[in-house]
Amino acid sequence: MSEANISAWATWREIRAQPNIWRQWSTVCDFASHQSWIDKQSFDEVWFCGAGTSQFIGDIIAAGLEGQRGGYRFRSVATTDLVTRPQAFLRDRKPLVVSFGRSGNSSESLGTLDVLDVLVPMAPRLNITCNADSALSTRQSAFSRAIILPPETHDSGFAMTSSFSTMLLTALMLFSTDAMTPERLVRAADNFDLVQPRMLSEISNAPDRAVFLGTGAMAYAAREASLKVMELSAGKIPCLWDSVLGFRHGPKSFVTDATEIVVFTSLHDPAAQYEADLIAELCQQFPEAKVTSIGPGADINLAHPDGAVWAAPNAILYAQLAGATWSHAGGLNVDNPFEGQGTLSRVVSGVRLYGVAT
Image 1 (cartoon, rainbow, N blue to C red):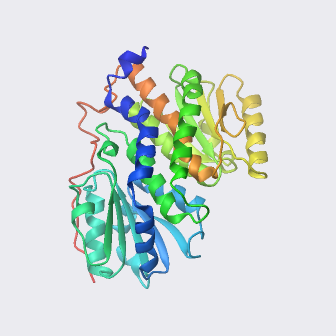
Image 2 (cartoon, one colour):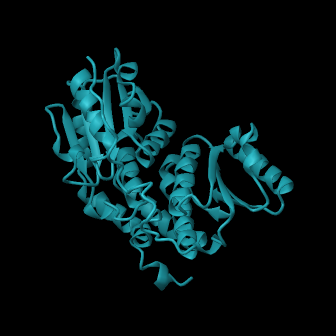
């Protein structure tokens, strides 16, 4: 495979463009103004809401930043759950609802706006989207605010890449409390440039199946990584994700000799010790499987200068690069792996939305 051939795909270019997008965004976005708006709102919980990859943004943040800003609870609430059982979530709650959406027009994004209008119309809403023309951008209320990411983040490919990472980093900038400066985005970009060549050299032939594992926020980064490979391979490479300790409790039965196992490792003990134990166990039990660690001092040395949650976009970079590489090598349309199948689409639409009872 030549770089020239694969770079014909928009998805490949969108993956590679991420560090420059983050650097530019660090100088353009008025994070201080958005933080000031958040601090003026009245709420007792922060909900990070989305579907699919947008949900996993919330999972990563809630696991990585619990209780940092203002001492209130962070929750990841999937819009696919909120729309189907709104009263179960919103009864006696006073949340700040942070919604993520690449298109900002998915069925569940629209359904969530409907739910909030009916059940908690005065709840503050912060919509983070890549589409300036979307419902998340234009359907505003007296209690809402929208952050529109650069148009370059509105990926044209099926898989969310720069949209995922930039929405995640934007939210981290707003809800993390320690040393919050735009230089965090620059460091993430620099880390990307350092780790990308090693990741590219590590990618080998497509495995029969893949597993991604991690601890804390990195366990949910593993979830996004596994989805990325399955999406880009059109399901031809089945993937599993789990926590490092949870993996032994049954999911390890997924592993065969033709499996690639990627472990996102930690900087601090005891997490790093548990991860090292599992890696040694997997190498001993499955000597034919490929086991790759990604993290501080790992096979792919990914530093965590600002903490694991900030390194999540760069850990997931491996799955983006590998997934696109394997998709291209398999003769798929990398920008639309499900071309001609009519089963999955870039923006989920056509879901029938039902009325919300008060």
